[in-house]
Amino acid sequence: MPEEKLPHHRTFAKMLLLDKFRKEMHDFFYVDEYDAQAYTDTMYVVDPECETSFKIAKPEAFGIHSQTGKLVLRLEENGRQLYYEVEGEDFVEQFAKYRDAYQNYRFGETCESILQALLRQKHTVDGKDETGEQIFKHLYPEKQRELLKELSAKKAHAKKPAERRLYDALFSIIREEFNYVQNFIK
Image: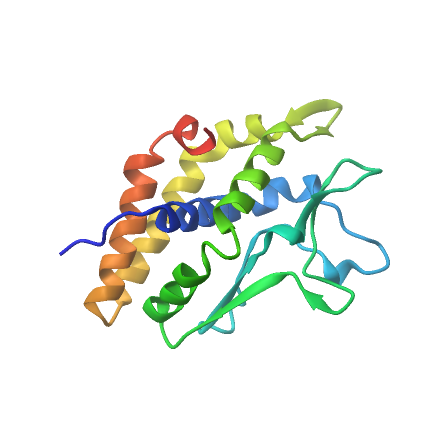
């Protein structure tokens, strides 16, 4: 039986897609020269060495820098963690914990706020202004294909039927609901 596609599935799929643009959107994010380790450029943080956890930005992690106008994603502030850590033995357990925290930590709102801010950001490359929206529109098909390929590979290695259903749901959302960049950025 297929996994029902709910708002927390859509937000997770959107976070995965946003993370695919991390390199291209890096210049839109603020990094403090004195405390660079306290900042990041993605709301979905994964340690490639540790498959048993990931972190997601809480709403208070996100802001706009008052002087530069760049997006700010702080990992911590005054010793307080601004990212929610999700741990679990496998992706099914991790996703269940993410789902349980979804409403309390307003991940959907944070994801939409970051996306909308990225769409409005601009920077100059080789003397030419480029907006976040232009970057999304130009690279979306390529990034979408990359992510679909990764999800297919993860599904192929999944040991549990529940994990395969979860990857199917995310794959379906990305391929069908976010099939065009306009559907993703709206």
